[in-house]
Amino acid sequence: MNFLGFSRLETGANDAQSDPEKLAPDHNELDTNIRSHKDAGEYRNTRNVLWSQLRRVWHLSQILLGLACLSALLHPAPLKGISLSMSEALTVGPYFLSWSAETTELCPQSDPISPEVHAELADKLDETFRTQEYKLWAYENLGGAVRIPTETYDDLGKPSEDPRWETRLLLHDYLQKRFPLVHANLSRTVINRFALVYQWEGTDTSLKPVLLTAHQDVVPVDPQTVDQWIQPPYSGYYDGEWIWGRGSCDDKSGLIGSLTAVESLLQEGFKPSRTVVLAYGIDEERGGVDGATHIRDYLLAQYGPHAFSILVDEGGGYEIHNGVIFSAPNVAEKGKLNVRIEVTTPGGHSSVPPPHTSIGLLSTLITSLEDHPLLPTLFRNSTYFRSLQCSAAHDPGLPTRLRDLIDRSRTSPDALRALHDELISIDERHFRAITGTTQAVDLVGGGVKVNALPENAWAVVDHRIADHSSVAALQARYIELLTPLAAQLNLSIDAFGKNVGCNSSQSVALGHVKLSDAYGTALDPAPISPTAGNGPWELLSGTILSTLGTALRDNYSDRKAVVAPGLSLGNTDTRHYWDLTRHIYRYGHRGATDAYNGAHTINEAIKAEGYLEMIRFFTRLILNADETELFN
Image (tube, rainbow, N blue to C red; front, side):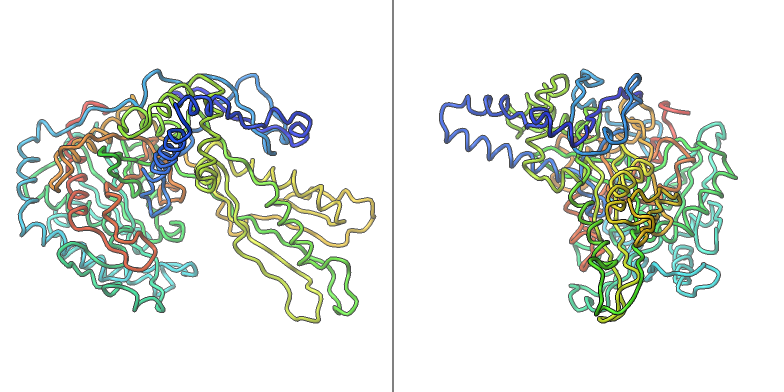
């Protein structure tokens, strides 16, 4: 899908000061509409309802590891004929360009897609899934995997050198015993000692394969928190409702769910026409540098670039909201840059100190950063704006006035500004996280002794880059913001490998500032995967709708369901898979209430009936992909 370019550009601070009306929030239209109610009491009630409804919007897709929201920004197309200076593009001060939204339809939906050629097989599998025997087998599949502590540490050495990797071998042995048909019928390749790729060869090699990915590793359990767990963290215990333990949500349910689906299909004698590939990384929790990167290289060598029809990895899920099931596959991920700011100055005895030590100078630089945050931006072609349209189109509890405001904001700059101001007033912190580049000073250090002047002070600033921005733009912002300040402080400065000079009036700098990528892990935002009107998206969303519409759990199958694209605020192994396909969707088909306490924390557990629906989703996705005409 070609998205038209809509942007909220940022003008310089000087422009804002000279023309304060440009930045003044325009509440007139919003307040006039609200105050058209007959009395102030009704105004307050409507305002409270509005806030309540919009707060719920934030939670529609907060399903990916407790980080994702049903929101995001899509990359705008290049703005032809518009040229911006760095200060205009990167300093504070909003300005809205008033192009209209790309489509006239609010939240277009796919039709549910159920297997037709394999309809009898799908029905038979559902009958099997209902049996207690199957449920206990499937639940134990996951429980047994959870009992193997495949922990990933940030300081892991190479897989060939560090023995802590070897817990993956225990998992491999378990998988071979637990899924005998998978290992008898699929080819298995071990990559870089521990990563796994399974290939289920289809009968029609002209069809692009399906790629399902997950990761074997989990974050460690803090030993000091073990006694706070309801069940032991590596028990894999099924208590009749929940399956307990580290990895039950992130991400062994995805790994075991997909393998269980394939084993179940093999038990019924299914042979695919379209090749299915399963790929399981080993260190997603530290960036996938030893797992996903090697998987990518192997698959590129085997199949070539962009050879896969669709890739589905861990990610968003679904949630019931005002009686409607909203589902949010993540079509994009924010970028990432950890900036190390290092200040070096002469040492000496602290009895004769300079006006500012390296720690004080570093503090000044950090203060400047925090005083000039990048403003959030609301694009009409953003995922978040599209999720609002989905709420306007399908949420029966949304006030009519707000529904109209969302609709009018697609073409009216005034309505868009009013919507932006309303959203940021409700929850500015989340709005910034969703629609802008964030910054958080998370690490700081300096000095070795109380009576010695610190020769070096440093800090690391974590940035999650908005998907309308880039690593280069963020680095340019650092240079523009801190270079003049360094000159005022009489400090020379190197920024990301470039000497950007010292413009002070003194001939000798009093110290030096170095800006760098702290860990060499800079990552641009992910390419936006195509959505409405695109074959792989139609297949995915249609499968989601049919899986929800035939759900075996109570209180789901008779509900209306809606699918809307979402954004992942964190990063998955898919950061390494961009060259395998344009159609990357991060979706695990887990309900919002199916995680007991989220992931990466105590009492990680998944609701068993929700995990069973994950297996159903993988099964139906494979069957639908096998007979689809939406793509080759």
